[in-house]
Length: 434
Ligand code: HEM
Image (cartoon, rainbow, N blue to C red; front, side, top):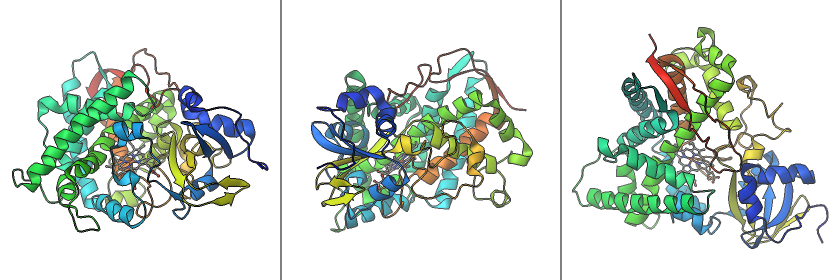
């Protein structure tokens, strides 16, 4: 008996999910007037849910696990196999610590410096060119800085190709056909190459600084005291470099916001709102510098579509809000719709950085990079890093250069996952700010 939980009348909704993209769960939550509903996906029963309480439930590790929850096609393109995303319990906590140990304030500050420099060097190459594609330039900037920071060797003439490999892995996640195949091929190449690097580091053929991700992944020991399989170490090192390159999406979205909401751009330029170095852990940050930049970055992460949903599997039978969660059932959390939930956000469809002025910052309401706890749960290991590099990049776009935005198609199609405007944001007539 199905009490009050809406049940979608469909043989299978996989095609609808691909067609509706980001709005698939959100549309049905609105239609059913319910934060939870049952459907069928990939030929199996599935429960979809969204909102703050659903997010809190989703991160209850007594009730859900990740092992077996990620479809093979996503593992073969976006994530890789046997990485931290697929682990549970003690094993997950131990592996997660490996990632979180890389995210110290000192290490993050170092990456900020590397990235700031990479942006300025890139801008110098843009001078005199009629236009550049911002998304592609961000890809190259983050590709360079991610490799340097992570201790992964990279020749200058490889930057574009390596960067595009990481973009292809991400671009594949909501695709079928060519775009998906491209992501799989990119991953296969990258894993082979990085596994080889791990072998060289272990064999003493290559020295990498001790405080780098490459060193950490090569020498990490599991709970069993053994080094990771070289393939798995490669998956985890890619789990550092790939998502840094992914920040290109958020930089493009930030540029889109600056373009669509010029009043926000003005505020970012005004001293009173924290012009100048709006990032880092320096004293001026405590004095309120860059407050507006912080709100702006949070609003970009809330407002623009990147992660659509997250999946887990029910660990044991239980009932929540009249819905029977049966062991083994796939459960999807509506990330996109939770960030736009009208019961959490005033006027959610408006881009309004000021909403973060009095925001209390709960772990389950702003969830573009997952919810809950970074250490004990699966929340994104790179969330602080992402916010830092978005601020560095925003400061660059707003204060270090000037540019025009030529006529182009900047429409974000919510059916395309990940969302990417056709033109990838072209800017013209770039000048260094005086
Ligand atoms: C996990 C989003 C950047 C490393 C995640 C999750 C999301 C996410 C949604 C899954 C949360 C869950 O499963 O509950 C993003 C977005 C980024 C970003 C939108 C911006 C571009 C980064 C960066 C790094 C990183 C820069 C590292 C340098 C990771 C790792 C995990 C993860 C290692 C797996 C954590 C775990 O399973 O415990 N991210 N991320 N991410 N992210 Fe990110």
